[in-house]
Image (cartoon, rainbow, N blue to C red; front, side, top):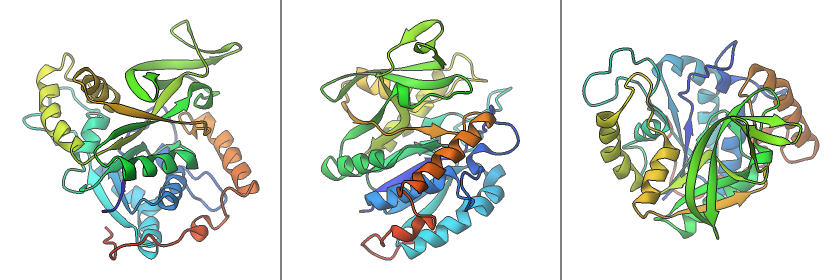
Length: 308
């Protein structure tokens, strides 16, 4: 079966002014960050891409990347599909005052019916590096029922322009013990801190790059209604993958942490854009990527792909 990559692109991008941040060009060829993730996933052997978006951005998304990527993927025998995350896609009525999406767990649940094999999940607006996709593909190939997390060093995941949210991990010999969602992590002259507390720069953090078996969807089908029933703030509470993982850990589920020293970058803030453009230019200058981005890829073996 095809290894599937789920790309979470339904986020509002509330901190990024002047457009939908996931659709911002980052190189001279007008590629966006998602292009590089798709390139690296196909190079690692992924054979299906599922975009999770909102209907409200569908036209812009397909104009910026979706239609182009469908053509690229078709030539490489990679399947593409769309899932739609909407706040109305819940059992029962939407709570009064609710305007924001239901979170990353709900976004993955939107893929129900589109996934029948091991799959990885990433954010649309993060550059993860090639090594993470290689490790994810190898893990899913050798652990078809396993749960995994690609772990990054905190020092490689910070923004120069403001605070970021990271899941700070505690692990023992590659086994995830806990994950603490930590908000507003900022760079300091000494390293990094959050809420005045110094953080170790070599800490392993989650960038929301997960590996799951298809059975994870069963977890979401039962877990999301339970989340809705237990919300303390129905207008703002979110069903988040790190929180779900924490609950699964408490119930005895094992997650493997697969660490990489790749450098993350992304457009969290409008001011990040130029540094991201410069970073991709350097990757091209160093020969990591071709100017014709997808030209070095070969078709994925298997039956003819079906594309959205």
